[in-house]
Length: 177
Image (cartoon, rainbow, N blue to C red; front, side):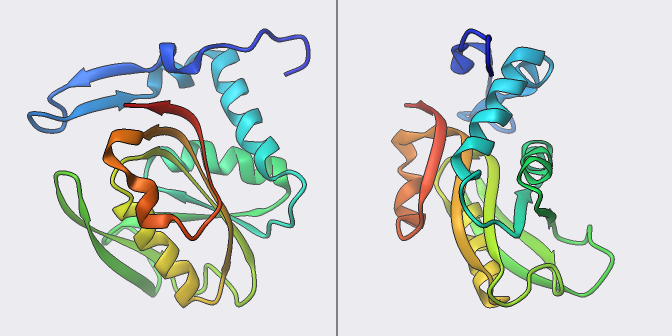
């Protein structure tokens, strides 16, 4: 980010009312992703959170966590593991069902994705109620991985998602009500 003026990333994210259902204010990060400077600032900021730590694997949560997490994994010289919605991975999986702010879902990770004692960083676009990321943490720990930190592009503070993951080091680049 040398020579670049720091941008207000929150101002670049588009709100989509009533998506995916009535009452939800969807945070559309495609407006940030298409902006070269904003995307670079977000990725660089996530990378700098973990650059001085030993990180073996970055886990990205479907689907927008893939975009940010894979680039951060590359910069950290770490492997990347996708956590996907049920039925999307081809090999044997570990599964977790959890509650969302508007329903429930099941996530899966390959059984061989995380090895015992690997240092894992989780990257996702949004922290809301914390149910999704808590399910991912449980799968990583069941596999024997150690969570070195969790980072989000956006945190919706009013939903108090940090409470679900308060035993971990958690970072958010943008905090919104």
